[in-house]
Image (cartoon, rainbow, N blue to C red):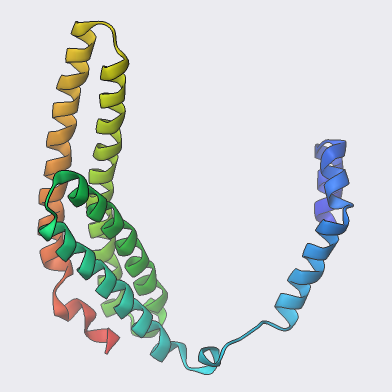
Length: 186
């Protein structure tokens, strides 16, 4: 057992105890069972080229739903939450597209790239949201008015950075939401 030998040379007696435990041996048995007799569902017998585009389409539909919610959000906090959820949905759609490149080539690759662009802009926005939250916390904890003011200025800059990311997202979304990018899913 290579893993055990490496651990023996490099780690503590505690790690060795874990590797000798009944629980660890049961994990190995369960993994072996999973590999030799996977619990396939009926869908597993269907061709991947038919099943996976449906999954990609569902992932995209969820993203589209969240983008609509962004546009209908009554306040900034709710909008930010929808944007964050949209980022996660874009990531799922991207990965779904990437798995299809082998079957559908460039069309799936273009879709995956478009979803990555959406994900990146929404990630920039989320980074700004997190930073603003932290700056607000620091400003509240700061006894010095001058330092609190400086945190406020930084917050304003982050707010602007976040809005620029949303503006770029809107541009990227217009391209990413074109039907032609999803034609391979049909």
